[in-house]
Amino acid sequence: MKYKNNVLLVSGNIVSKMGSTLHNIALKSWLISISHNAALLGWISALTTIPMLLFNFVSGYLADTKNKKRIIVVTDFVSGIVCLLFALLVNINKIYVPLILVVNITLAICHSLFSPSLRALVPAIISKETIKKTNAVLSNLTELVKIVSPALTAYLLTIDSISIKTLFVINGVSFLLSSISEMFIDYRYKNGNSKSSVKDLFYNIKDGFYYLKSHTVLFKLIIFAMITNLFLSGYNVLLPYYGEVILRDSKIYGIALSFEAAGAIIASFFIYLSKKKEVDLNDIVKATIPQGLSLIIGAYPHSYALFISVFLFGYFLSRFNVLFFTYIQSNCDESYLGRVFSVIFTMAGVLMPLGDIIFGYVSSILANYTFVVIGGGILIATLFIFNKKPKVNQTYNP
Image 1 (spheres, one colour):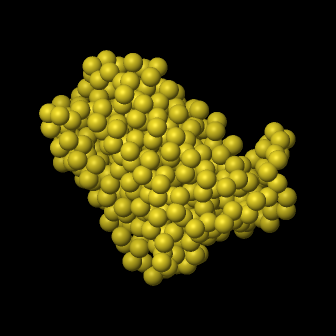
Image 2: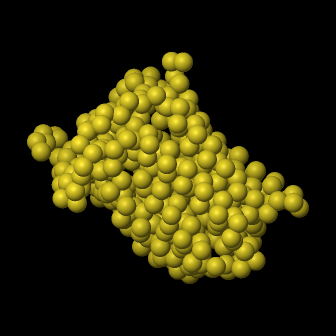
Image 3: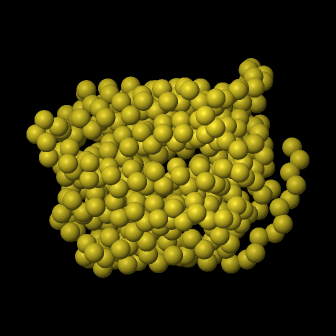
């Protein structure tokens, strides 16, 4: 089959993303419904993110020096087992924070190992001409999952025999199915020097950072992602709180996620149909300013305003993400991709724990007006970082 790797890569990811989305919606809704406290959700999110950031640098090194396919298969398998154990141990009538943290941190570490390996694997198993379309398809199906999952979650929980625990089981099974799918990907690992020391690890991390720094456009984009993710972490904390507490409707959160995903699907569809193969900085920047403007609409305390806001936000965020990752995969040396992605994921997420904590409290104080702070922050970051044309990239010689 000509597109065997494309199909296996996408299908495996979509199955696990479906389970993960069900899991996350159920977990956040459960925490908010019992505690009515956005700050608790913020703290749990922050404490989960920190270990993931610490592992990101190691994961990039492993993605460049070890078998990428094996990494994604093993991490999906471990994630599946952890989710099944969580479903077995959790008490849905009581929040036991240590158990939630252990499970979430383990899943976060697996994700930090999985993501750079997956992104670095794409150019090795898929032709360069189809990378952009593959990213668009993956993004499109991912957002479709976000539309289906909230409705599916709500429907499943109306069935008397199904509880939140069942959704955790579904997530575990989805990870295991994804792991099985990835086993059949055709990938020939070039076994290099299997012996590595701590010195080699730090040298390779530093090497990846300097390579990235020499690429001026990429470095600007990563600084932008780092700053805006501080505000986007607030968006992730605010959204479930907005529905449960401000609008007093538990269904709002799931519906809002569906609208956000619908916008993202339309964006991915247009990118897929685009005949332009090359991605430049202007394409990416054009998707950033509307992100901030769209979120400000959500400050008006009405469900319709919220749905319009998140729909537009989903559209422009998806456009940014697809173009951003396509630019990296098309312009970076393949031998550096794992380390480059580990630096990207680390720098992009380094301020997110702080954002989770800050906006957990800000949401409780400013309520719906938190959208103005988040949207305004993204606008200021865009104008500050992209106000000058970047210099020509330097040539990096390790």
